[in-house]
Length: 431
Image (cartoon, rainbow, N blue to C red):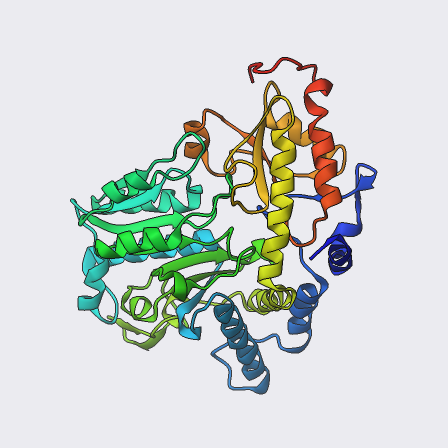
């Protein structure tokens, strides 16, 4: 990919043609929410115009067409991440998927509920058991495990990061023991842009008999992803970060694990038999899909996956790597700017969080927004990581396949003017 092709790609994204504050929009906030190509918008509209009906319920032709579209979308998205159809559960987003797992573990801990109580016991936690996360986790991959430990009496521990934000792998080797039941960690940090060694960490966990939960929110949109090859047990990702709509995400789980895991939400469409005293549940994935599902959103997410596949995930990753290196090198060269995560020249994705000394991140964001540049400001739902690095908030620029080198350069030019604009000229000035 190059700027010529990217400018052609931008024609597929109507929102990118608008102006903000009288200037062309430079959208560098895809780490929070990506934009949608026309094919995704049209796929959802076409579903409502031609196929809108309840799935897995009606026997009429429209319901059959809706069900076919829904399940075809599942197969498309599952294949995109190297999974089988029955290993992909639709959720509202990645946060919902992680909570689904945490509460299902709770259900196993209480009673071994589900169709196979004896199998469900493998998920039961009790005092003495440990759940391990990392210090760089998004709150969505931290708080559900905090609550699970509170409910079950298990202990939550974390793998620390060093002063540059990298995981201390020697500590991971020490902390992963026979007491570890779950290791939950992010594939790519939404603050640091660092790509964690999934296979190495997964091997350590499996050798100790622990289950591995991967947060793939920042990897599924940007890297070629094969969850089978990575050998993780569960993984989550969100549609709105990978050109899809909001309100749709997915939980991946190995088939034998999902079928043994007790359900979380219960109700219609996830049962085989119901009496007035008990119920029996369907196999996965339907056992975790109670009620009306995000049908049109699933169809649109499949269209997003097709767009990414046709563009080529290897090509997207290489382009974003180029943008990320340009971004980090430029920010690192600005006096008074501290960039979090890997240094220039080291592997990272196309995002960079940075601190402008003497200027609050919210003021930085407003300064950039006045110039048409959209970025994220705050703690990015990673307060413990910011606290470890001595910060309360940062500014994050995150690129995607529709960003050009010129847009990165315009951000860098603006970033170089921030401290002068706010009258901060001394290196090391307090925030």
